[in-house]
Amino acid sequence: MNTPKTTPVNERFGQYFRVSPALDDAARDEVYFIRHDVYARELGFEPVRPDAREMDVYDRHSLHCVVRTNDDNVRPVGCARVVLVDPRNPQAPLPFEIACKDSLDRSIIDPASLPRDRIAEVSRLAVMGEFRRRKGEDRRPVALSTADSAAAQPGNPMSRFPNIPVSLYFGAVAMAQRQGIEYLFTLTEPRLAKHFARGGVNIQAIGAPIEHRGLRVPSLMRVSELYSSLRAMVRPIWHEVHAQIDTAYLVHHAIEQSLQERETVSVSVPLGPVVDA
View 1 (tube, rainbow, N blue to C red):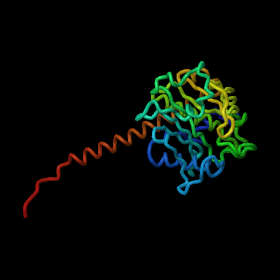
View 2: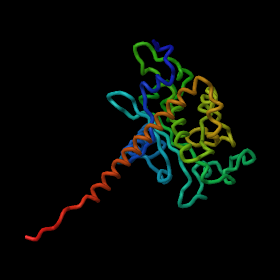
View 3: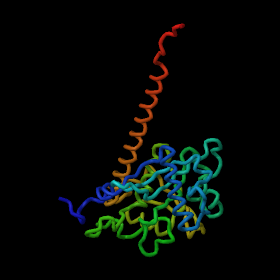
View 4: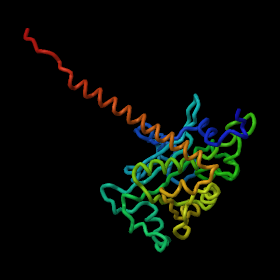
């Protein structure tokens, strides 16, 4: 029998959390609420809005994922988004291309030379306050600790919240893969890059740091190469997150197909002959 010290990290994550793509208006509204709670209400990075929702123009062509608790009292935990190029104007820059236009090292990689349908940007990573209450995290949008892969404390299984930022990034990667994305760019905190490097997640710096809500480094993840570099301790989280994302898409598509079939049947059923009085 597994004990808190021997339970595989993916089982501990799956026991407490579920990650899924935001595939309908209600789920996307939940994402915007999380972002507002973290970026506006708590951190003051964005203005507080009357509707308590944080959105911008890039959300119109973005994919979103959300992590929730896996219990009877389901609560939002965190979110992330994948900004795709604008289908109406594929040459329009992604957010990092604007913020880092003078700091990118184009000898490493030049986003402008890549096929636009193969690039995207991970951004708006946010974790709700109750899940990042360790010392020093009150002014950061995510929670990180070297103990994130450790066992929960006896008598308090939620005392550590294992790999929430990792699960959000892996969720973003899973969604990007479905879109045929190969080059995932992001503005990364140096400590986040170091945290990922311990697990073998290859995030390559592609330019000089900039000031953007703290020090951020323009970075690149090659989607096709990510899994091969992961350490054994991190791969179970990858598999768990991808399985949850795949299941969510399957369920969503099944529901949509069922609704379409019902609509087709309702339209094709004859109303019967009209009889004059």
